Length: 507
Image (tube, rainbow, N blue to C red):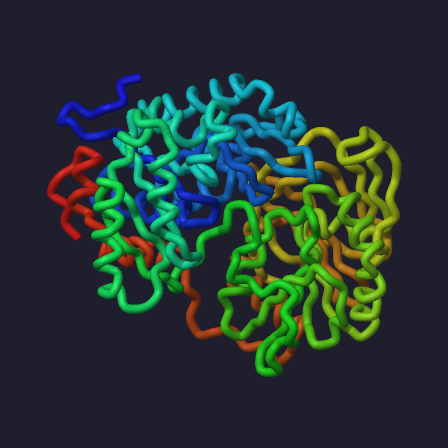
């Protein structure tokens, strides 16, 4: 693989981190847009994700949401090569392996790490294809790039950077404290040949007067011999789909009830919650207060309850009952509260969930909540699609993506939620979801359905007649532009472009 451009720069940049959740995904997203704005054909890449927050590419492949967002920032179509290995945890010890966009197997951690050569080979193949098609590849690492007990088996961080001949940018999070130890410690313990690949440090999430950290920059450079390319202030004007955990800024089991002036929305925080970014539009709506709830509590202060997706529907349903949530939800329902179920949450709202093939657990049938007259049969074949439809009884068009194992069959005591108009670019004509007779319980397989402002406003209006949408919506495209401007204003872009073998950066 020829990994360097002829004029001495790199054809790839690797954004590696001193730890998890230091902002690698956001920095990589910003770089994709910054380079694209400069006329460079750039593509994102992450060899392996461990996340239940996935999406569907236009050709029907499943990859991590972060790489879909990064592709959008780069203004290109996302493909399976951008995230060739996706691990979707479905228990405390095991995960479903999605290889180059398709379900491959279910492995325990021990089984997966026993021999990573198969996964590494697929990742290398995908990286090679991306590098052959694009001028520049922005590589995102995973977790800490210096987990020494896993170093020889880690094909996501420095092994990928070496294979791509990439310049490495090391991202550290100053907001969590200990930034000097983060940077100096990481560089001190990695092998010299990998340390030589690190061409710059980015300090992320700075709060306060940035001028007060000039001495900090000097100290880091003197300690490590590596230049600090930038100190990026904390940025609230952009929300990127989180990779593998509910965002740290989210309100989880808050002691206080929602403000009376806002529409309270509660989401059950399942042990195996998936695609929680379905709820991100609520977090960004100033008229809404979203709370994630893990522990049972009264729901009387909320107007709407969401049962999100789950990677282990049967297991989470058992947890649901054992913790006492079922009684709380029935109480909320009897008081006229609105309940919405997405994907796995939709399945839970039904009468039964059958698992004849042991897809999630032992073969058998589980009793659902019985709030929708539907029954679900789990199947081995995963359904993946980008789809659009029209909500029954309205003129509202909606878009979303389906990722589920199983089919749901309606009974006579409910009506369909929407007519599906197309899947993966082809005409459909069938129906999705279900609605209770009183219209207050709604289930759908469509992830991302709340992204559409008109559809979200419709749901919230049903839940709370007082709800009034904000006058303007902050679109993803506006977010990408704002993020790129913010990051470009606080890093040394000339040096960054020089590393990528490009010159003449014009902010």
